[in-house]
Image 1 (cartoon, rainbow over the protein chains, first blue to last red):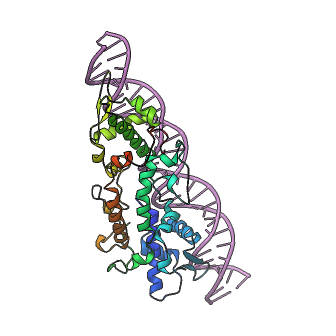
Image 2 (tube, rainbow over the protein chains, first blue to last red):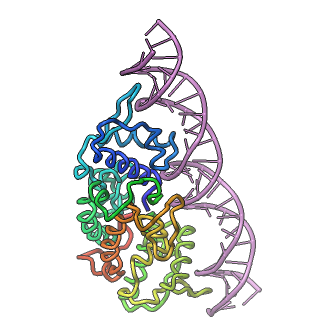
Image 3 (spheres, helix red, strand yellow):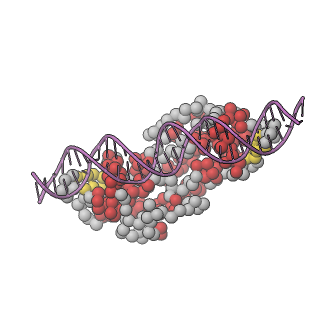
Length: 152
Length: 152
DNA sequence: CGATAAGTCTACTGTCTTGATCGTGTATTA
DNA sequence: TAATACACGATCAAGACAGTAGACTTATCG
């Protein structure tokens, strides 16, 4: 299960992408994004900070400030966002590339049957999810303009 | 990430399956399984209970009692075990068949872009993992006999 | 210059989940 | 009937999850 936070992050990015598509270069305020995405404003602050630190969006301060998308939707990787918000996506710590951790009581990774089986599943899964981008969400069928109301 | 509990469950099943393969029909005691799988004994009790309630293993009480596998390894579904031990495997509650739950603030599932994208990923993922059985783990490469030492 | 509208940063707080442990049961059989 | 095994509910500590709150910085408008 992906977390609530991840859903909020996606809704926020959808709101920003929808706005950018309309040719609007003006940033959206946290308040505005919160309204459109149905996210508690104070919680959204934290989420946007994380997404910004991941280099997907940029913020400007002061009057008429806000957030805007600084990548093209087809360059915003969903799996990267998942890692940023929810942490490693590997089923086992010993299968994670970026957050590798040896399983404490594991004597031999090479012969571990649990690792072996989940590795196979995981590689196939990665192949699918690594290719997903924000663009796939934008183009997904005849979705409404309204971001609010998307799966919470 | 799968939980520690799930890893323990898999190791316990591997121990039982290894034993069954040797033509041993005698049940293994919790104590024995705990030793072989490196699981805290008192914790393993609960895990085996759940696995038994799922119909994968059977228990006999009293002297010379213990647990034994009552399904053929190729009939023990890893995804079912995952659901039993770790809960739903769908990325969103609204995508789970057995544990379906409407997302609270979702006004229209049919047009939800988050749901749509994750649905596509999920179906592909299901295809892979639903076919996995305990047998795949048993036959996985040249694994050692010893269950202990498998990925924790 | 100062009021105001924005984002930033550090804490904190309930509630639930995870990973256990403990005590006390009940069933079986030598 | 004592010993050996599983059964089951209660409890617990630590961490994750979802959110709140307060104080602070930055930019712009009048």
